[in-house]
Length: 306
Image (cartoon, rainbow, N blue to C red; front, side):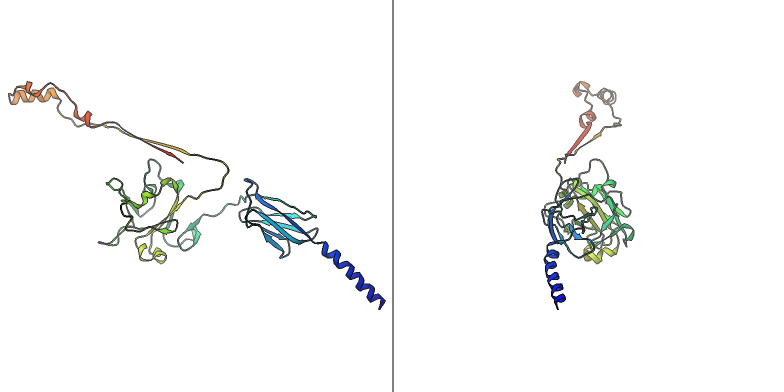
């Protein structure tokens, strides 16, 4: 009986020691390159289910840790770190960005997939493939870049180009493709008072185009997509402590290479005098080259500051 009582007392004395052996640690998780906090990062005691996540300011607090435990800090796109716990009350962690290459992903309306797994006629045209030069409308960026897509410029000032994907399908209806900008379909009838609804988009703010050419696009957007779909993704803002500016200068020129061969003033007076007998003094003495007066050297400059 005495032995049982002694054993019970020993266990009771050991319980507070084991209870106070577990510690609490807190700190902040930030990016190693920018020093910005990482909200939603995961902290877990390795081999257990004890864990937590950082708040909006990258701060965390985790309890019930014993000396010798290993804390695992991880976040998507960053290299995970494993740090042994040796009684620290505060532990700040810097996470490095992962350098693993990601596969190219296509956003096709109802989800995302890799380019090799995409079904149907889907083509992506990014900024590296865009047409260069004096581009004033978004559709000019992809003119001639995709098979089966015909873009015919309009002769009207400010008018929209005619876009046809694999020809037209209607004799009287609208044959233009559906255009979706950042997930928002544009009205095919256009905006009232605007000749080209795409003119509202700055070509320099476009990240890529995804063209859906076949009838599978109708399963996403319905009958509006019967003539194909053009998905436009615009550039997104990035968090940076540095101010950057891009200066783009484009110059185009035009010059007459050959004039129309016509009579000058002296030759015209000679013909009038020899054939009609009219007094050439009535024709005056001017000798004006009207082609020089009409045509001039054309020089246009396009300056874009981003």
